[in-house]
Amino acid sequence: MKDKEIVWGSIPIKGLEDGDFNKFPIEYFNRSDAHKGRIVSNETREKFSKIHKGKKISDEQKRKQSELLKGKKFSEEHKQKIGAKHKGKIVSENTRKKLSKINKGKKLSEEAKEKCRQSSIGVNLGRKHTQETKDKLSKARIGTKASEETKKKLSESQKKRTNHFNEEAIKNRLEKNQKPILCYSLPDMKLICEYKSINDAATDLKRNRGGIIKILKGQIKQPRNITFIYKDIS
Image 1 (cartoon, rainbow, N blue to C red):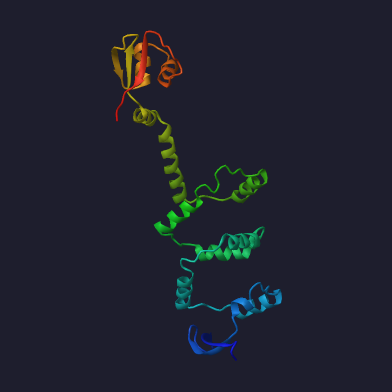
Image 2: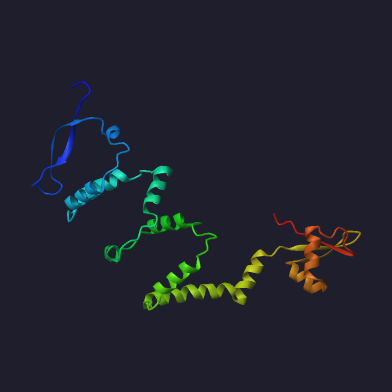
């Protein structure tokens, strides 16, 4: 009996209320090693499925399971195994309806929304849908009607997008990005004038805007008569 170890386990007893457990000693043979790499047969899975079918988990049990999984991180290998297992899996229409019914009316907290947003950043970056996927998405939306609330949200979103391109918004962005420049005469380097932007200088001096930019960037090494430099506003 030296290789055996007696521990206390918590096992549900048939006939008792859900969540009511009776504790008694059980024999333990280092289960983690004994079941490592073990593959459960389809027959055994079906038996487990039949046993648990229709069984309702109490709120207390749910809470315990939630606490147990909190902060748990899966290894990359484990994640890949889960991904490979579910790859190509087709969810039945019946299961979809059940999931839809369960999640209907649920509202995510602001914290949960932020987590979802952060986790999705860059996921679809540069991704292109195949024509087959596009056709499927198009077909799935045929006949669907947006609710008044959804229409309102889309309208507000489009208004913001339109405002981004209107004249006033463009002007505000240009003003925000403007850098003052100084115009000097050559070769004595006397200050002629200060301008709020390249556009102002080009308009006042009747010069090409592109030429002023090239002088500022140093692409024109020997400008004639006048030169430009950015004003130090630090």
